[in-house]
Each structure stands twice: as C-alpha cells, then as structure tokens.
Image (cartoon, rainbow, N blue to C red; front, side, top):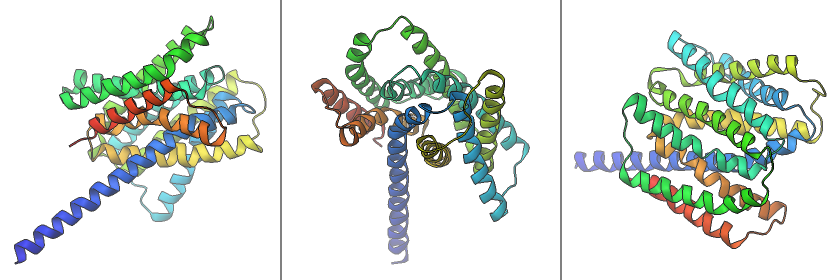
Length: 302
C-alpha cells in the first residue's frame, strides 16, 4: 500500500514538474514573440547601444536588489567567470549588433533570424562538447526552418536593398556568438549559482554597451513616453524573466528543446501584428506557421 501511495506521489510530482516547465517554455515563446516589435518601437526615439545597455542594466539592478534583500548574493569564481563570459558573448556583442541592425530591418525578420541561434547552438554542442541531437529533433528542426523560409523568403526578395546582405551578415555574426554562449552555458548551469550568474551577465553586458555608447553615439539619452515603456518591458520581460527562464530550463531540458522557442516566436510576431495592428496574414505565412508549430512539437516530444 505504501509503495502505491509513494508511486502516485512521484507521478504527481513529475506531472507538476512537466506542467511547470511547459508553462515556462510557453512564457518564453510569448516574450520572444513580442520583444523585437517592442524593441523596434523603442528605437524610434532612442540610441541603439544606449537603449540595449540600459535595458540590461535595469534588469540586472532589479535582480541584484532582490538578491541582496533575500541575502542570496553568494557568487563563486565559476559563477563570476561564466556570467562575465555570457554577458560579453550573449548580451554585449550580439545585442549591440542587433539593436544597430534593428534600425534597418523589420522586427519580424529579426525574430526569424534569431532562430539560427538554435541551429548554431546544436552545432557547437556537438563540436565542442560531443553532445548529439536525436534524429527526431533534427526532423523537427528541419520542419521549423522550412516554415521560417516559407514565411520570410518572399519578403526578403521583395524588399531587397543594397545593404541587406551586410545587415544579414551582421545578424549572423551576432547570433553565432549568442549560440556559442548558449552551448557553453548548458554545460556550466548545474555548477553555478543561477541567480548570481544572471545578475553578473546582465550587468556586464549592459555596462559594456553603455560605455561603448558614450564613446560612439551622440543624441538623446532620456527615456520618456513610448521609449520608457519599451525600456521597462524589455528590461523586465525581455531580459530579466527570459534570462531566468532560459537558465532554469537549461538545467531541466536539452539544448535543442530549450532553444526551440526561437522557432515559435516568429509565429507569435505575426499574430501580434494581426491582432494589434490589423496586419493581414497571407497564405504562405499561415502555411509557414503550421510548419513551425509542427517542428516545435516534434522537437519537444519525449
């Protein structure tokens, strides 16, 4: 009898754990699907590097205040090293480039290009850490990539500009850096203080971007109105919550499952445009969305 009760209790705990992780993953998809649109909105009145840097500094400062209040600020050397590396490779360099490119490329296209982080992460995970991806997950990746190509290939061809290849190349470099940082984090996440890691990473990335902005950028550095709203949303949801959720899921799932949210985010971007800005969804966008959703389901199958 005791064994039956114990077994039922374990099943209940597993169900709760699975439901919790799924809810966190869905939240990550929602945040990823709205971040680039809000970022584009904020850039209308702000400096790119300064906006990115202040976003991370604000998020890191809030988390640091919480950590000191709860007396959980206990970083060790491994956490400090990992946080500094992640701050440079995931926040400072990639987001500096993405915010600059975001002045010229559509937010939906940036959201789609961010899906390459998942592919590069899997490649780095295999190349440097010898971790293979299952055939089922590879099928899901190909399905999602097919959907992304269907959605945006026509848009890229129709809106081609002389500098488009430069912007796309810059995005690729940025996302390669983010992918390496993601693959590296996967193999450190169980040996570090996750909260302290997030704080160090955000403050490092934000500090570097703000200093660099003071050197190369000139213009308005005050956040008011729309730019202030965008800053608060990006700091709390786009940085603080997404970073905490990603770091936690890295300790629960494999890298292909965690980064698969980047495939579903473009679909949410399209839905946001449809609901709030009355943008009409074309046939190829609907078909592409179905491919992406199918691929994400396949990737996250047990």
